[in-house]
Length: 397
Image (cartoon, rainbow, N blue to C red; front, side, top):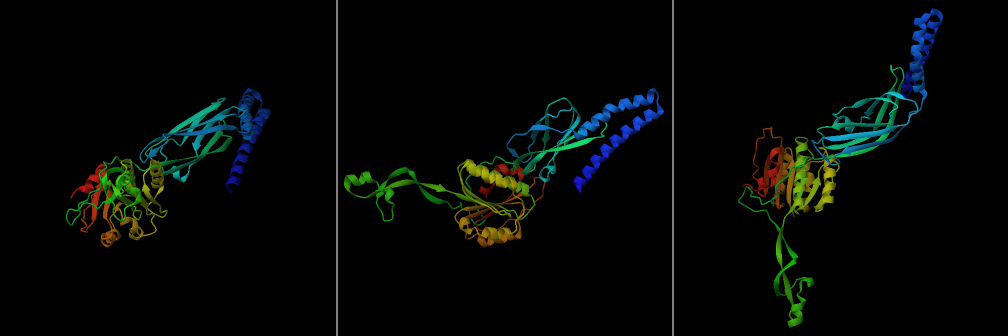
């Protein structure tokens, strides 16, 4: 139906041009005189150009789009530049350039939606605009729409050129001062449990061999001297594994929860901490033992597109991960402390090494703090202007 309407509209414009030419010529023939023929000859160039524009092929080539900067975070601005060349053989009068609006673009787009050029014989064109205050997510550019018109709008030609490109807007990052999570819980001052591991690169001495020692730990030089088995002693290092989860069952303050989650991940990995991550939404993913920047980038790409669309209660999702939670400190980020979460904390606290729950809110939002008196569980209410001190807040009594 749309194509039929387009054809009828185009045919109607052409018929109007022919009728206008016939009417002015007839008027000049029957009326005679200077004025009538002057009107006819004055309109003839415009009528001929409109007829040419109706049938001439439009040749637009070398369409290129550039987006700067290439890496974007929520709240940033971006400059989009589109360039193309015109190789149409007739001169063009007016050209309007605009983006093909998509769902992902239209809700974020705050720049100039089109630009008009007076073309003539000009061949190369550059069009730039800005997108301001970007929201987290993904924008997909599908192409541009070019509209050509004559002097009076009698003939209108439209050409759509596909030029696919997508940009991802990552969560807004805050610089968090990294501190190992030493927590003081409600029931006495307790430091979060640490797992002990041997650093085999640091030998501090030797001792007598004991049953169960690894063969790789045997000090063979000592054995060669006195034929007595001796074992190397290594430096004990404390490691602290974190298991980070984001609550996608509530839309309240969800954007801020994503920002804090991304900031925690960046801070821990940049300081060589041990952390795993799970998203709890419809497209659930687990990222164990994040260490490298490349793995962090994959998580950031995932955080850029997640939504508050969990199809399962957060407590049941976390309950399935008790194997990981029991060997690490659970750090949960949410925008709302639900009753389901409170019940999960009560039922799981005795199995977990420690649980820290960040409840995120806007700095202008009033939040009534209700302390949760459960062993090994600490609930921290934090506003967006306090993200920098998130780890410090954990260590407060």
